[in-house]
Image 1 (spheres, rainbow, N blue to C red):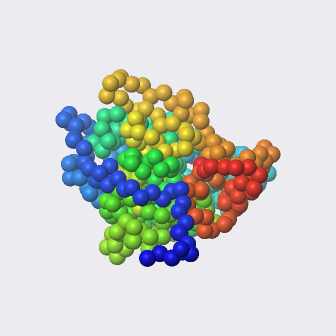
Image 2 (cartoon, rainbow, N blue to C red):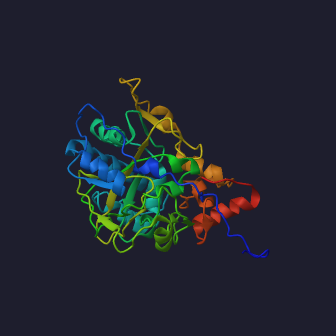
Image 3 (cartoon, one colour):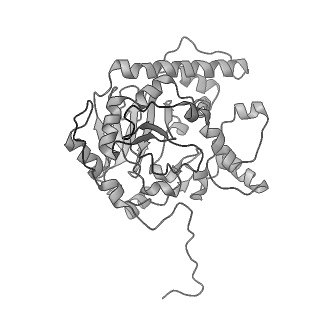
Length: 376
């Protein structure tokens, strides 16, 4: 019997009591037509039963190599921007794809954060995201109507860098609660052979089966990442920390496919090379993206319109990083400060208890002192 003076536990906006196991555990009827790229029934079953599947030797070099070229151009743009602003004295143009950003980071700590915030979607990324064979795989998971989710990421995992080492989390922990009952498959696509040494991903096998979102916290160390403690993962999601944690090396040309409820993290990069990768997501177009109204999904396939042509323009016009900041902050720094701002804020920070303060949360809370707010 509870005492009248007993204090009720604090509940945070991200916490919900209703699980949705059927959304993440139910394999849909498979397409009757055989199409290029489709995975075996065994692999599709594994995706729903274990929450992930590793697909090797999927992309040709002609399909995936252009992504490396596109990134080299993004790094060149960043180097020139830093050089012209007097932030660095050398652009390191002679260094290659796997070293240049690391040296820029040494000269201007946080360069990788600036690259993350660029938010440009090069044509090579578009082509990979809407690759016909890849969409044939996604159709096996969610059906013939397919939209690209507004959250995609280029990961520049420079060696031994806290800002590029993502802790345990479920992807839904970053999104609005509407996303808790929407299957949003992710393809994590490394742009080199991803290994345990250079920081591939780990998953908690079967951690999605309960259909629950565990209680996360914000933020991890000196980053903007939410985090899921292993004790909470075991208690709330039934994860066996001795048996269920799986390291997932993925060779270049392959990808790791997982759902938005399975706990996962990236390991630290202990190699000498940058571990580049892309996160691409999809969902059914009629379902909520859960991105706080910041940006809409983009229609990629329609059963009613087999000849649908993707219109990238409205998608590209919205800078999600700028809109996320606008949702949580009324601070208007001068142009130069904003251009080289190394902090990231978003609505996800207000979903969970803020247990670690750092430069990212400091800017958020300073904004709250002068205005009311809701998250990004």
